[in-house]
Each structure stands twice: as C-alpha cells, then as structure tokens.
Amino acid sequence: MALELQQHTTTLQSQEKRAPVTTFIRDTFFPEVETYLTEDVVVEYSKGGQLVAPFVAPNVGGLNIEREGYIAKRYTTPRVAPQRPLSPEILKQRLQGESVHSKMSEAERAKKILAKDAQKLDEQITRREELMSAQLLTTGKIEVKGYMDDAQTQYVDESVDYKHTQRILLTGTDVWGGAAAKPYDDVGRGCEMVMKSGHDPRYAILGVESYKRLLDDANFLKKLDISNLAIARIAPTLRIKDGQGIKYLGFISEFGIDLYAYYAWYFDKEQKKQVPYIPDNKVAIAPEKIGGFLYGAITQMNQAEELETYEGTRITKVWARQESDTKMLRISSRPLAKPDDVDSWTIIDTF
Image 1: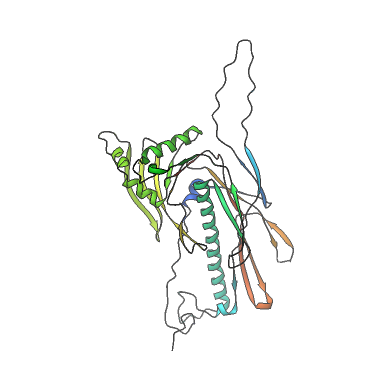
Image 2: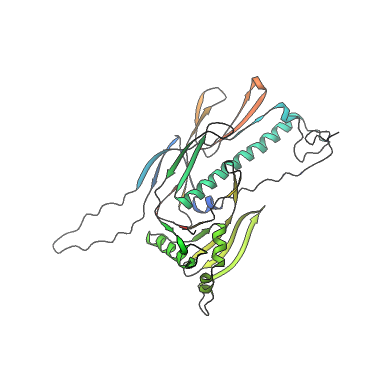
C-alpha cells in the first residue's frame, strides 16, 4: 500500500526548503517609499545638467537664467495581487514538518496555513519589487505584463520607459572577452559619465558572466599588477544564503567604486527556468541611492460589502466563498520604481 505523505496517519516528516528573498538592488538603489491614496501617481524625475554661470557684458546688471526643470508623468501604478484558497481538502492534509501524532485542530491548522500563505504571497511581491528595481537599473525601463488568467497565458504588455541614455554599448572585438576588450577603461568611462551628470559613482553591479569575463581579462589583471601603485584592492568574497546573494569583488580606488556580482535568480514562468535579476551581459555603475518606490492605492470590498480605498505598500484581504466552503487570502500592492535623476547611473552592455 502506498504511503499518503500528506495524511496525518503517515509516519514521515519533512523539512520545508524555501527559496530566499533577496532585496539587494531594491534596498541599495531604490530605498525611498511613498504611498498614495489614488491608483494614479505623478512620477517626477530630473535629467542631470551642470550649468555654468555666464559672463555679463559691461553695463548689464545681470542675465535671467531659466530654472532647471524636471520631468513629470502620470502613471496608473501596476497592480500585483497574488491570492490563495483554503479549502476543506487542504485542512485534511498534514502541514509540512507537522508531527504525525499531532493533535492540532482544523482551526489551528487553518491559522498556520493562512500565516504561511501570507508570508509566501508577500515574498512574491518582494521579488517583483526586486525585479522592477533590477530592470530599471539595467535597462532604464520596467516591463509590465498584466495577466488576465490564472495560467498566466493571456496578458496586456506595457512598459514604463524613463528614457535613460547613459549607455555604453560594446560591439565587435571590444566586447568583454574579445581581442580588443578593455573592461577597466570601460568601467572608468562609465564612472566619468556618472560624475559628469553631477553624481558620485559608488557601486558597479555586474552580471555573473560579465564578472567572470572581467577576471579573465589580461588587460584588467595587468592594470592591477603595477608595482607601488595601489589602484585597486581585489579580494573576491562570496556572501550568500541558501544559494543566493552577492559576491564582493573588491574596491577600485582610482574610480572610488565597489564591485559586486549579483548571484540571485527568480523563476520565469514563460521561459520555465531560473533567470538572473542582473542579466549576464550587464554592468550598472551608480551612486548608492538613485530613486525609490511609489505605491498606488488599492480599492477593494470591505467586510461591510462596501468599496473602500486603502493606502499602503501591502493590502491584505480575507474573505469566504460560501458556495465552495473556501476561504480566500489575497495580498495586493501597486509598486512602481522610479529614479530621482535618470542620468545618475550608467549601463554597460558588455557583450
């Protein structure tokens, strides 16, 4: 007779293995949070410039200088709303790791299941925030696919494009790993672009393959091997938990930046595989903080069966479906990552 591993009468226990949630990109580059009481938000950001005061001819009191403007756009914040049902069939199943001789009541088990579901749904939203942050950091825009079915096969495809132009596109033999590659100079050029926009470069975030090609580059290693000239301290150090995290490469004192490779992935349902948050061919050079998140409001039915609008980063709803004896849990959010100055960071396409 086959063992029913999820029934209470079995004698086996298991330990749950959860994928870690990493928020290095979001917390480092987009830490600010602002919530709204409307679904629409006004995104305001500038495009860097360094004006010089003009000389004034004799007998002229002064010259009127235009105030530096900013870009303001109205967006309807994209909504994420993962939900899970709790049915009688689920309550009959032993919780993962629960003792086979457990005397836990169904009410107690329901509370534990809802708490675990709430944590998992919140983690999914957090991964979405990290992905939005990574997309903005490496492409200058955010891809938004609004799915219309549970199978996630039908969707409306949109994007939020901030018109980022601080780019270095390497081609031909100049690509990292190519015969004429000069990754050290490319990083230096990227830092100069950030400085010219009025910001201080602090980090270089590398895709894993770009990191490997950097360390394999003879010109890069030769730059570091100069006697009595300490232009960099390279000591790769891995900082991970459950297989995900960052690898600290070192500090390039000539440019004043720390180099990191981001060892973190998410599961892409369309590609049906783990995909890195930072694409392999990308390097982003940026200050410590380049923006934040705006959260639109969530409007939903309350317990009095009236529509009510809520402000916050996470809005939870629990309700019952009497006809199917099912309790539903949903966590909704309307996050939108935005830059303060769209010229404050540089993106390098390394290959």
